[in-house]
Amino acid sequence: MIRQTVLLFGPPGSGKGTQAKRLEQRLRAAHVSTGDMFREHLSRRSELGLKIEHVMRNGQLVPDAVTNEMVRDRLLRPDVALGTLLDGFPRNVPQARWLDMFLAGRGYAIRGVVVLSVPRAELIERLKGRAMKEGRADDADESVIRRRLDTYAAQTEACIGFYETIDVPVHQIDGVGSIDDVTMRVLDSLGT
Ligand code: ADP
Image 1 (cartoon, rainbow, N blue to C red):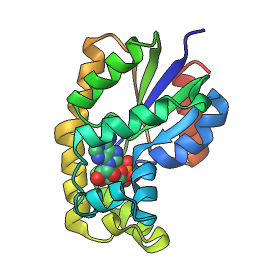
Image 2: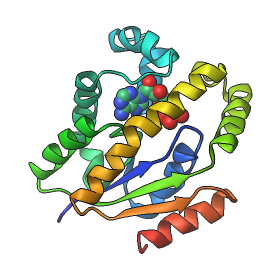
Image 3: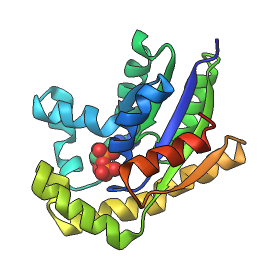
Image 4: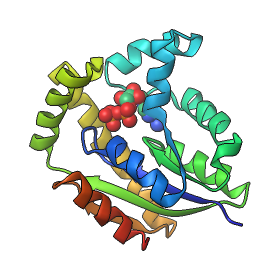
């Protein structure tokens, strides 16, 4: 059986994490969020957590070598046997190329890329609201929010172009609306 991988893209605040939690059951795929994994390292102050603390608080990307190695270890665990829903990875073209080689080496296919789009002004409002509710350090400072949005536009959007060139279906989804509506749009786009 070819294991299915779905990639979830979207700028910070677009609802990737919220949607991923709902989609993992419907797609029977393990939700793998690099942001959650890094935050877990930060909160238990692991060796990796201490190494990435400064980068994350400033809203910059963790170096590819560190990120790819963490993802590789995660994707070798047995719970991803049926499928994987990747949230927050890849975030630039070198990561996308690395993932492509990793999956191809195991005979795994990328089923599709889902891109959640939300206007920038709404993203900033959502992230400021989330800062109050969840207390994420990288949401509390507007200059850090803007840096993360700029990094998405400069590096992660290029990565979406990479999938178009290798003929992986890319589904652009309107991320504005109720949480249920957005979930339905994503499932429809994947034909589920
Ligand atoms: P958001 O999309 O709201 O910025 P995430 O939870 O996906 O949040 O990521 C939080 C932070 O974790 C990023 O700003 C970055 O520092 C780090 N990070 C997550 N995924 C990656 C990745 N694939 N490559 C490098 N850094 C990452």
